[in-house]
Amino acid sequence: MNAADALLKTLIKNGLEVVFANPGTSEMHLVAAIDHHPEVRPILGLFEGVVSGAADGYSRVSGKAAANLLHLGPGLGNAIPNIHNAKKAVTPMLNIVGDHATYHLQHNAPLTSDLDGLAKASSDWVGRSESPNDLCLVGAEGWRQAHKFPGQISTIIVPADCAWGETDSEGPLVQAEGPEKVDDQKIEEAFKALSSNKQSMLFLGGDFLDEESLTLAGKIATATNCRLATDTLTKKHRRGCGLTKVQNIPYFAEMAEEYLSGIENIVFVGTRPPVSFFAYPGKKSFLSPDGAKLIEVANVYQDGKYALNCLNDLCKGKKIDKRFIPSGAIDVPQSGDLSVDNLGPLMASLLPEDTIVSNEAGTSGFIFASHVWDAKPCDWLSITGGSIGQGIPVATGAAVAAPDRPVVCLQGDGGAMYTIQSLWTQARESLNVTNVIFSNKSYAILQVELERVGALKTGDRAKSMLSMDNPEIDWVSLSKSLGVPAKRTLTVDEFKKSFQEGLNTDGPSLIEIVV
Image (tube, rainbow, N blue to C red):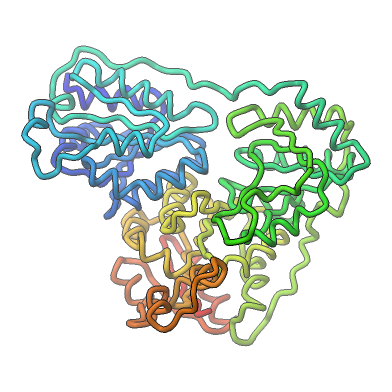
């Protein structure tokens, strides 16, 4: 049988359901193979960053990999920023990258590049097929590696002749590795630290911000009177009324230092000690208090659930104090112009239960984040790797993974322009995504950073490199041109009406908010 067809059969047997694709000539036999297998849903992205971002969102929600079908080195290169975000989130992802036929590479054709180097730089595991007979084996191993707990970036390189050649067999059904074991002595050490009379903190991250983990953390914190915290940016964080509140530490280094000030013991589960996003003149990079005892009980690859259950057993945790549970009380604005003061509570009050929120609103996202604790329970997906252009693609993939749940994207206007083609995919696939664009006509976070890094006094030329107001982007027209209905809202009533319409109408929508 055709090797490309055998590869698809192998991946389907192991659980593949979705392929996000931006293929080229070298991948045509893989495209044909997908057409032969209705079990797989092919989804076209008009830019590779859309493809990789959507695969990340799909994996965060579904818990398993989609496949990305990419074209040679330039295609993989275009996908790398959102592969980077997925790698930082530790989500499973399988990249299938076509290459020139093995005998054609020697001719250095225009699209020839150091594909292996690009793949190794952006992936946790890379496999290259050498013949039609090994393609399925490489594919099966790639799938297994992608699902090594909690997830990895796995890339298989498929020369065109390895895909179009004939083979007699499929690859095997593979078993992914589960989480690594936790050192029980570390758990004992953590229990003693949390139970001491010192100021202590339980710091969660990774895959351990789901409802079960949050509940365990709440019981531990109640029993030991410790504080709870998590990373500034998280993979998937269950939050809302009735759930244990685990606060994200602030983005800015000096604010994070102040937040952690006075803590004498920090126990980490699923993450590591926080560091500043960037270096700043005269400021610390490592944010934990000097002299604090740091106990890394479980890293992101280890069995954090086991660690939390053991800690709770040692603490004899039975209940969660009300101070850790958001009340659900939201002072909802009823009228007036939209502003930084009323936008957060307004949006939090409108979110349906079980909404998936993809947040890349940058500076504007802080308006909303502090209010979402009192919203109905939802899942919050953040830009874990800091590479902008993630929000709309991640929302796109999340909607593919959970078609029965509402998806809301909070997106800054700067990041939106990196992967705006995602709207076209949402329209084409009739995905239920309500996209909210925060339009401040600038890279506002960079304007803040320009001052924080201690740059020399600047003028209009420097400001122009961080501004998006000349010419202004017409978000409503742009969205409509990509097939997504859009409105610009300036008042509480306008936004409430448009947001509810977006949630209750099949297919995607876009709302522009001027901030």
